[in-house]
Length: 54
Image (cartoon, rainbow, N blue to C red; front, side):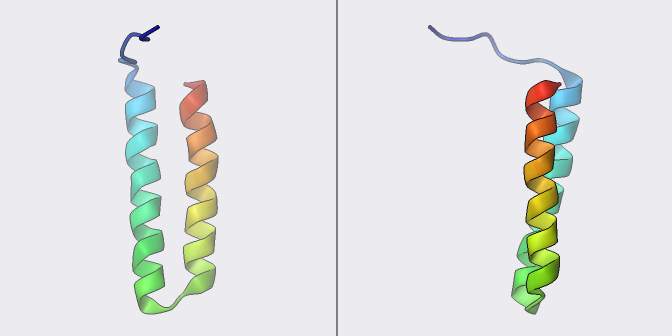
């Protein structure tokens, strides 16, 4: 069964912030900062959980 599209603005904004943290992680990896990359990916995953709740 196809579910209707989620039109929640909260979901959209959390998704944008999550993408931002993933981009920060990518930049950290390019610069060789593994701790920063890991921390950014961890925050992005936490936001993924929040995203599913809004």
